Length: 348
Image 1 (cartoon, rainbow, N blue to C red):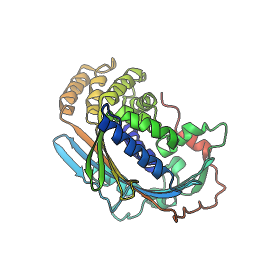
Image 2: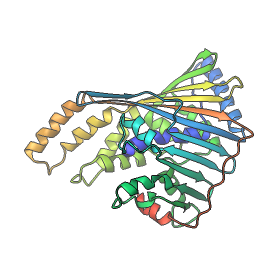
Image 3: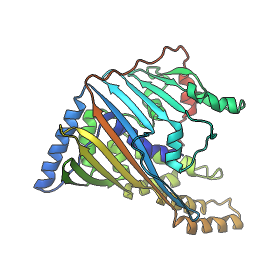
């Protein structure tokens, strides 16, 4: 669902670029901001770096609880980046298990990954590891994710490069110089809680954090509404407005750790997205095409979702390494730009 992908998109954007700081109203806050701003600038100056992202979730629905702790040794996303390109590997098996507490895949499947190389004008994608899914079900339509090695042309004027980049990677990647200004302003509360290692704790809202990392919360909410809405609710504007209101008030917790050099080491985020369930249930009652029985069932769902929980926690580990070599993408002549553009139509 898009609202889960939006939460992960925040993580990916931070993972690829580094983390920021907060703002305060007293002298201590200003000092904290200055220290974190300097750490951000120094980290950004590193010629190359590694990033790993781990995810943990807590679900509570229908009386059942599912909790997946953050596994630091088995990240869902691992990247290497320098000033020329970025290479990332997504562990699809680990990602789904981390998000939902169980696996969707066959028990004998032990490798399900996607590799991506990002360049200014091209994204190369290797989905060869998805071949076992097709082998198990030859009728399975993988769309633009069909096994193979292909590229997406961001220089194609017909592709809409920024929109396509956002669709493929999960979030448009903000310029680090812009993020250095936007992310500090996003944290409404910030304080240093430890000196060994230097640790800073801050809070903001989901909307402010999304915007600070290059997202468009209104566009994201429209996509959420399109996916959360029911088929008979064709106009998602009202639902999107409710989703925006939720993100604008939903609290996001941020913890930033620095290493012994004063560079970014670990970024933690935590968001409680439980309220999105109630929004969906309440909105469904507005559907004029519902029968009385369906309306009653929707009302019961509201009562059920009042106790539903979905908490998403992330850990982003960052390591600068001047000697890191980012692998080159494999050669490919297969262009799937049009397939990806059609696969991610403009929401709404």
